[in-house]
Image 1 (tube, rainbow, N blue to C red):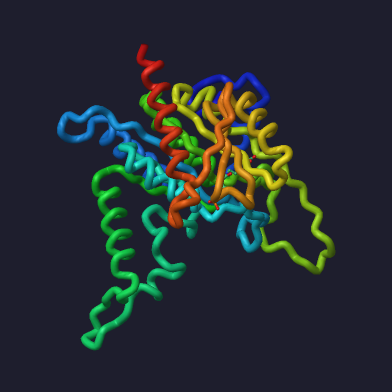
Image 2: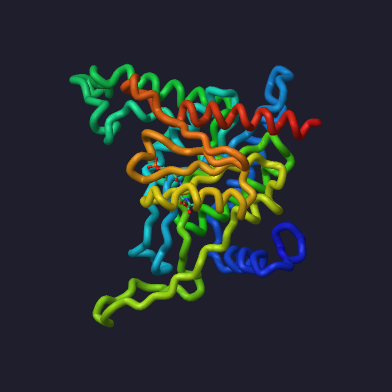
Amino acid sequence: MDSRNGSVSETPLDAEIESFFDSAPPLKDSAGIIKKLKEFIEYNSTPPGKGSPRRVVCVTSGGTTVPLEQRCVRYIDNFSSGHRGATSTEYFIKAGYAVIFLYRRGTFQPYCQSLPEDPLLECFECSDDSTIQVRQPHTEAVKRAVSDHHAAIAGGHLLKLPFTTIFEYLQILQSIAMSMKDLGSLAVFYLAAAVSDFYVPWKSMAEHKIQSASGPLDMRLVQVPKMLSALKKEWAPMAFCISFKLETDSKILLEKAEMALKKYRMHMVVANELSTRKEEVTVVTGNEKILVCRDKTQADSDVEEPLIELIVGRHSAYVKDSDL
Ligand code: 9Z3
C-alpha cells in the first residue's frame, strides 16, 4: 500500500518509487512546504477581484546532487546553471501564469540576469555616514531586479522552493504535483532541472566520510525510478507536461527526445545540446519537430522568449480541448 495516496502498488515501477520515497531521509519542514503550496494554489485559484483562476506552472531548475555519505562531504552533481529555469519563470509570469519555482540552492534566480556575479559585494558600497547605497553602474539593474522580484512575490505570482539533493527534489516535486492535481488542465510542469539518473540508496550509504586509506572506491549506484511516469499517471494526470532532453552528441538528441515523449507520455520534449543550448532548442511533439532559435539580430535576446510563447500557445489549445 502506498501510504501517501492510499492506492495499492501493482507494477514494479510503483514498488520502486515507493521504496525510493520510503528509504529517503525525511524532508525538512515538509509540513511548512505543503502549507505554502496549499496557500499559493488556493490564492491563484480564486485571485482577488473575481478574476478567473490563474494557470500554475511548476518550473524546475538547476541540477540535483547525489550524496555519497549520509554526513555528506562528497557528492555527485548534475550540470545546470539554472539560467533556463530562471529566465523561463520571468516569461511565464509575464504571460499571466503563477510559477512554483523549484530550484537548486545557489543557482540563477528570476529577475537577477542583469546583475553581476557577486551582487552583494559588487553592487553596494558604504557611504561616509555608513548608509549603504547602490554603486552607480548597477543602479538600474538593482532597481529592476528588486522591484520585479518583490512584485512577483507580493502579487502571489511566484513561490520559490529550494532543493539540493535528488531526495529533496523528488520529495518536493511529488508534493507540488499532488497539490496541483485539482487544477486539472490549468497545471503545467516545465521540467528543466538536470536530474540524476543514478543514486546511492540512503540505507546502503556510508554514514561517515569515506576513508581514502582503504584504496580505490568501489560503489554501486542504483537507477533513480522514472518519476515522470508517476507524475503523468498518478500525481497530476491532467497537467500539461514538458520535459527536457540534454545530450552532448547531436546525432542521438532527437531520437532520445522522441523516445522520452512516447515513453513518459509528455506533451512536449525540449531537446537541447549542451554547447548550443542558449542559441536553439528543438521542441518535439507527437507529430512535429519545431526549431526554436534566439533572435540573433538582438544582442540581449534569449531562446526562452520564443520557447515560452510557443508553450503558452500549445497549453491554451490544451486547456480549450479539455473544456470541451
Ligand atoms: C535541460 O536540458 C536544460 O535545458 C539545461 C539548461 C540543464 C541544459 P542551464 O540550467 O541549462 O541554463 O545551464 N534540462 C534537463 C536535463 C536532464 O537532466 N534531462 C534528463 C535527460 O536528459 C531528463 S529529466 O535524460
